[in-house]
Image (cartoon, rainbow, N blue to C red):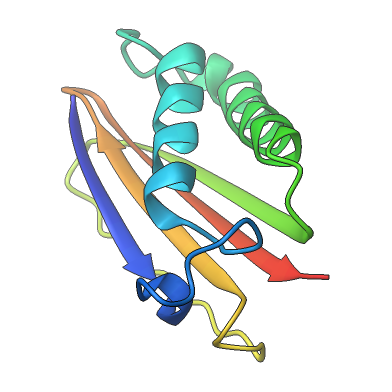
Length: 123
C-alpha cells in the first residue's frame, strides 16, 4: 500500500511538543491503522464504500479520543475508485496555529484511493 501523509502543525517544534500537542506522526499512524483495518486488501466495491468510510472515521475518532488529549476532533474520509477521474479538495480553518493542527493521509491500492483528514482543535 502507498501512503502519503500531508502535515501542518506549527506547534511541532521541539520546544512546544508536550501532552497537549497535535502530533502529526501519532495521528498519521492512527489513520493508517484505521484504513488498513477497514479496507485492508479489498478491491473497490461500490456497495461497501459507506461501510468502509464509516468504519475509518469511527475507528480514527475512537483512537484519537483514547489519547486523552484536550482536543475536539473532526475526521473526514473519501474513498474513490481508480478510474482516471480527478479529485480536487480544499479546506480552510480559522484556528490557533500554536495548538491546533491537521493531518491528511492518502492511501491507495490497485483499485481505489482513500483520503482521510483529521483536524484537532485544542479545548
